[in-house]
Each structure stands twice: as structure tokens, then as C-alpha cells.
Amino acid sequence: MIPIQVESAWKGTSDCRDCGIRDMVLFADLNEEDFSLIHAPIDDLRYVTGSLLYSEGDKALGVMTVRAGMVKLVRNTSDGRQRIVRVLRPGDVAGLEALATAHYDCDAIALSEVSVCRIPLEVMHTLSAHSPRLHRRLMQKWQSALKSADDWLADLNFGSAKQRVARFILKMRHAQDPQLISLFSREDMGAMLDLKLETVSREVSFFVREGVLSPLDKQGRLYQLVQASALENL
Image (cartoon, rainbow, N blue to C red; front, side, top):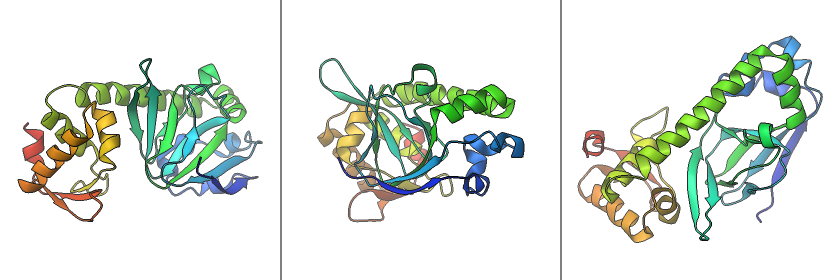
């Protein structure tokens, strides 16, 4: 396992108040009274690409809000295969299921350099019980997670290989710049789309040759989306 760098363990709540993406995360709606309920430290953790945030079946230490980077959630099937069930990006929450089961139901692996806030379960339970604002926020996040999982299954696991890759590319547009696309290893993409690595590589190369995508790096991870309609109309 690649080692984790623990940047700090917050003993107060000033960092939560001043969080740069606070409007996207669980604590967006908390007021001063809510913050006074936080007594356990909230860990600010950083993970390098490929490292494990937690494993399927692990006893949960807390839920994690993604502040930067991308995280893949992986399930191990009964026949020994791995299926990527969802990709988390800034503002998403990993491990929400732990609030009900106290265990994680999948592997969470960093797809890029990742920064997360790990909020202890006891803090989440206390705030959920005493703060209607956080309870509403949790329900919104939970509903969003379920919808994202359903959309992922519906959009990326049906249709031809070309259609699956096209839909995946559209999902990987940057929120700030929809013409910027971040992809990752073709092996990971194949696991997400239930396609062979070679098939994914062939389809991405096709879109580059057709002028739909323009590579922006030598690693094949960053692209400019030139013709979104060509993907949307497949």
C-alpha cells in the first residue's frame, strides 16, 4: 500500500468554516451552534495516485468528503473480477453507507492525487441527531449518490463499445471548463465500462482521428473536447 500523508488533524473547526469548497460539502449549511457540536478531530488526509483510502468490509473510521482529485469505488465480484461502480469528484462523499452499517461496502482507490476530509462517525451521528441542517444535507448527498450510481449503470454499461466510451468521455468533462476532459488508465476505463483494454484504446483513438478529441498531453489522460455533438448523438 502506498503510504498516506496526514497533513493535519483539526483540533478546532476554523478550517471547516473557511473551507474553499464548503458550499459543495457536507458542512455547507452548518451554523455556529452546529460547529460547537464537533468535538472529535476531523482529519485532513492526502493520498497519492493508486493508494487505498479504505477496503471493502473494513470497519469504518468515518465518512470522507473529497476536496480535490478523483476516487474510484470498486466492488469485487464473486468470479474474482473488479467492477468500478462510481467515480467521486470534489464535493462527493465516500463511505456514506458506513452511517448505516459501520463498514465500507467497496474499495476506494485514488485515481489521481486526492485530498479528503475524514469526518468521524461519532461526529456524523451527533450532528445528524442534533442538526436538521446536516440531516437534510446528508439525505441530499445520499440521494445524489444513489442517482449517480443508477446513472452510471444506465449510461455506461449498455450500448455498443463506441457509445459507452462516448458517454464516459462526456461524464469526465471538467465542471469549470466543459471542453476539458480528464481520462485515466485504459484498464480502469475498461473496468468501468465492462470492455477490454484494447477496445477502449481503439475507441479513444478513433475519436482522436475523427477530430472529436484533441490530446493535450503525452500520457493520454488530458484532452480537449472539440465536437461534443459527435459524442452526444451516438
